[in-house]
Structure formats: C-alpha cells, structure tokens
Length: 113
Image (cartoon, rainbow, N blue to C red; front, side, top):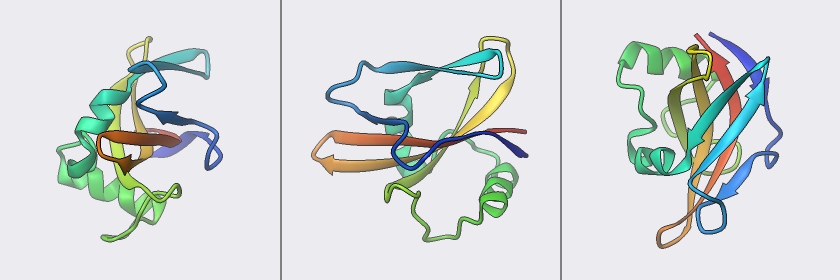
C-alpha cells in the first residue's frame, strides 16, 4: 500500500447539496470518477471494501484505530475505485452528516495497493 496523492484537510471537500453527484480527480496521467452518493451510501460500513484483511491493512498503514475519525472529523471511509486506465485505487475520505441528509465529504488521500 502506498499513498499516491495526499490532499490538505479541506482541499477536496464536497457538499452533497451544492455539488453534482460525481467529480473527476486528475493525477499521475490518470483520472478517477468519484460518485459522491456511493461514498455517502457506504458511510456506516466504512466504505465499500469487504475484505477484512485489506481494511485492517489500510487502517494499520494510516494509523487509524477502532474509534478514530477522519482528519476532517467525519466517519472514516475507504472506497475502492477503478481509474480510467483500469488501475485499482482506494480513496480515504471522511463523511460528516452536517444535518439531516446533508453531507460533507472530504477526500484526504488516494492510495494504491
């Protein structure tokens, strides 16, 4: 596991009431299409990674404990995505419910397996 892109704490924050449902991230001559609603829908599971070993490896690598929050103060979310070039990446983000059905998603890092 390695970090390929590290964002500042509020550098990539998106509000689900004002931003369209998906965004495009460009990096390393590649791009990722991020569907924000998919991240929101998996907030209570901690993301879409089902393999416990991989999830624990990510938490260990980033120093995240059982009761840790993301740097933005939201729930930790690890979301596996494919880039336009077909490579697998993991988005490390925080999801915070500001008010009823109003979410703030902050992407902190992009990692590669």
